[in-house]
Image (cartoon, rainbow, N blue to C red; front, side, top):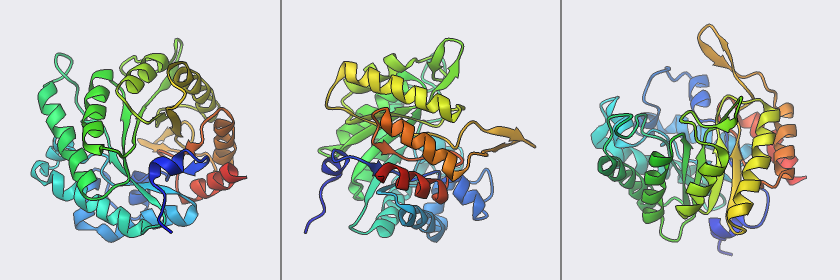
Length: 300
């Protein structure tokens, strides 16, 4: 029997994404500061092993190792001309791990700079960069695209438009990264939840969410409630997803340390599910054991 499309599957209920890629690479000896995306070319077995660990833990989908595989981010490592090669390899590695049983989301992260006049990026150049990445991922056979960890509405809008254009009938996910301050949840660039949701829904995404951020587990649950309410005010058809970190990190000897256990993470994930989110994975600090515990909680 043919596998149902990702769009059909995410509409059915509990859907488990994977966890962090970076921390798992470091755990396998990859040097901090190295171009993680180039490992798709240089060390594909390491990337594939991480995908398989998440799938064995219960993930329904894995994200490609292409978070920073846009022209601007790769250029900082000297790989600006390898965008298509790196993204294609990332999609192929993920597909090799999943086979025909699970799903692959092409991962698109921010450029690492800001649009003029705040930064140096020109809108046309950024649009071309995201289009180049998105098209490479779709051509390599991903089941959908996810634009994530955005903090500025202008960059998010350009990335989503590029993903939406390249995706065709494939679903597009989009998320922003929020922290909680005195005036509530906002991104680093000051975008509140309602504004973020309104822009992403207007851009035509299929699934809206949040990921990353320096937030406690209780605050992630609160954020989930606010995000669901904001989405429902805009649309009844748009789905919601969440990829929280393993709690709020502690800075120890210059390194971010996440102390949340798999059991604690799973308990928070269950509360996020009860808030109305059925598509859930993990971000920084989470590993296969966190996803295993979360998958069990989500499917109970």
